[in-house]
Image (cartoon, rainbow, N blue to C red):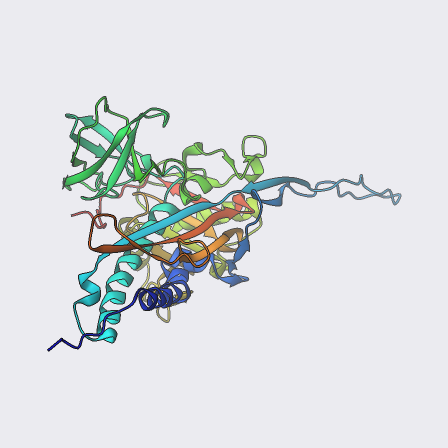
Length: 440
């Protein structure tokens, strides 16, 4: 007697995956991190979203204010001039996630409902983690996609790496390298491609928060040397310089990213972000008054006062620096850090405050860093919402060649921009020895 088994058809599987990506797009993508949720908020305390179209998104920005006002005892009018404006532009970065699932996950049960739930849960968990980590890496980075820098090339299959985001001292070398990841190796200039390989093992050393990691490659890459960089590899190519703008280049960290959106801060200095260095403008140990000094000078330069309008701003830092900031506040007060309890952010997040400004502690933020971000000056540039990689009705599910398995891929086209760079500020170089991150 034949077994009465009801199998899932390709049409039903595709339909279920459509519900899956719709759920993720509506419920997960806008709140994947506190920073993403706050940047996409529409209203007076958020920058909102703008739609990209054509080659680039072009916009006007004021780089020098009105200057020709005057007084006169005889009624003489001042010279007529306009505030100096220049046109900036921003392109689009394309973000992809692909996940493979075995056919056994589909036919492993006679119940369609059970199979659907099981499969959807599996894919949802995979996509959720990939989305969160991908957004974290991009928004905390500098647009280049550098995951680590080679400190020592021990052999063609063994390297020691450090400097996540390509920034010395930004965190442990293993922050953005994991087993089964495919990486491309370039020379320090990003011009010479040494080769591509899969990472077979990572041995992380966490004797300090900036400890190195030993990476073993599955196949050898010749000519690797110290100062070479690692980036994500794709099926045909890699992700070098394909990332969206991140906080490192938007805030012009170390004055290494002078030009942003085709506008040069060297030419228009009033448009540059405010930068403090620990040990110079402030001490080496984070204090609440450091944030006050940063916010006050930022107000005199940009006209936006973080202490009077704290909900328009957000502090982003590491758990190590955040811990020291909270300790500096608790040492002065007998009340909670945030009187009345935590405050809410878009996406359902609740956080503490410093000087009334929400503080978000992020394990992927470069060590020793504090960002003070004016959210209405940051905007999310949309070109394509989270959706499957397909053309018209070609289907979101594809057979894996040579395997009893399928895969599905999803995409999002977006970028991050600022219309007023001088409303953003940072402090770098704090003593931050707490390795609160996902490296084990």
